[in-house]
Image 1: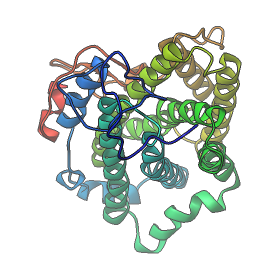
Image 2: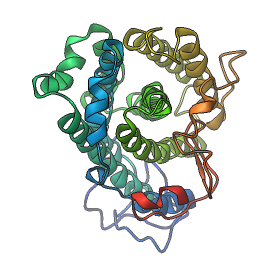
Image 3: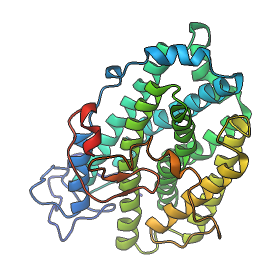
Length: 344
């Protein structure tokens, strides 16, 4: 699989010739002529989602953290470490994906995603600096290398990304796209639920506000890769292997459950190993449906954390347009700041 040319004056940007991959683009961002209208709509949503973490007051969270149980502190620290890794590797990986995307409107939203992932990383730094004691801050960044289960968790996706860099062929690229989808659509959400659960008990409310904004961005990233999978499959019917998608989903779900049980288990009020399994398998079924594949976990058709959706602001008062747990968007509205959250 060849990288697209950076300078390609003989390229053909006509809509009839445009492809997500394997096209012949000049790389000019002629956004007056757009083939993939979903990317144009999503661009507007993502641009409207700009926010700055420092606008959120974390003063009370610093006091709340001192009063968390040892198990809650361990989960808080470990989940932060996991989230930091996810956004860090995506910030570095998305440009690698862009090198092979030949539709300018899709490259545009992937560039915004890269920026948003960087904002997320900076947000975690703001949380760590504002809340955690100085003596443990650096350990959060190193935990992913020292915790064996977390290391294996991160290694699964990261090795696929690295293998494509070393061997950029069709098969490895297809796995990268699936891995990107799994990371955006499965990996974050048990961690997000932990923070929302604390918020439901009036603890770490500032952290929950930051996570909610990150959650909003991640929804748009889920939608990007849902569309990429479907568009690439439509234009290249044999590019993805359904059995491989199912296999990767099963592995990701298994690791997500193992990691969540390891860092949370039955030690946190409101989360059990049973609800973790129920939620993760329910979510995987939803994500598979959204790309046109059949669910693989029979009987897992309910979200055990439905009561937490109000903390993700998916069912609050006003004109809420995004369901973060299901990864669907029913409308694309603009939001210019944190204060505009209720209008999404």
